[in-house]
Length: 116
Image (tube, rainbow, N blue to C red; front, side, top):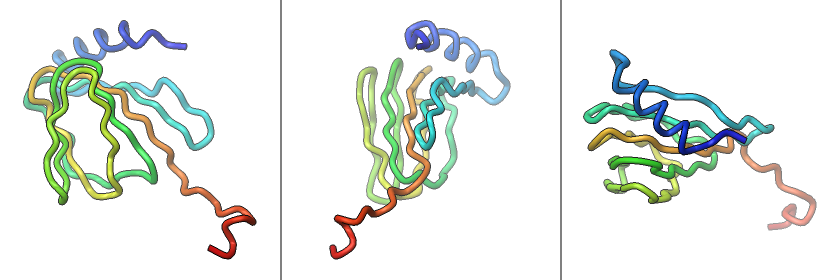
């Protein structure tokens, strides 16, 4: 398994050096499960986009703001945030790195769910 601490620092340095202020790398891809480390230089925004079926954002370093129609949330190092199924944006309030965990397919109802 990758070392998150090492990845945090390498993506932070890459984001600060990149013209677009971003660095990202997928570290887990197992069926519908994906985990990606994302580095953003201070002031860089991931513009509004749709959320996958299920997702969390965990701040590994720095401070970010997640903006959605239901409100804004500021998250610091160590914070874990459930991303709603709404469109949202992420702004780096300072140099930041986060772990994005997503499930890209919706669950298929099993036989026990048929009548519910």
